[in-house]
Length: 151
Picture 1 (cartoon, rainbow, N blue to C red):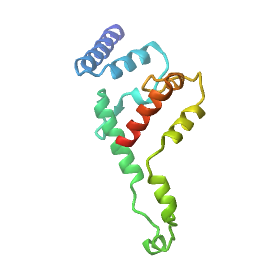
Picture 2: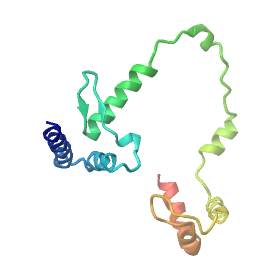
Picture 3: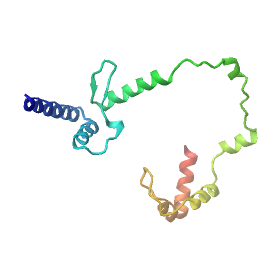
Picture 4: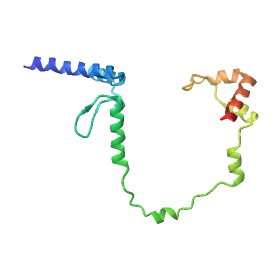
C-alpha cells in the first residue's frame, strides 16, 4: 500500500512539473524540482494555495494570489481623521529651484557625471560598464546629451 502511494505521489509531482512546462512556466517547474532535491527554496517561486485551498502551480496565478493577499491585508479603512491630514503643510519648491530641477542637463553636467562614476564596477542590466562610457570620450558624451535631451 505504501509503495503504491509513493508511485502515485511521484506521478502527481511529475504531472505538476509537466503541466508547468506545458504552460510555459519553467520557474514553477524548477522550483518543484529544487524543493524535491532539497536545494534552496526561493519563496517567490514556491506554489501557494488560493482562497479555496487549491494548489496554484502557475506563476501568474501565484502572483495574482499574492496581489489579492496584500490587497486584503494592506488596504484597510484609515482611522486617521481626514481633517487632520488636510492640515498638514506640504512645502513647495521655490520657482528657481523647480526650474533648475526641470532644466535639461548641459554637456558639462553629463561630462562631470560620467567622470564621477566609479570605474571597474559590474555593469547594470544594460551590460554597459562605466569604463566603456569613459573610454568613449566626447562622442559618447554627445550621444548621452542627445539621448537625455530627446526624452
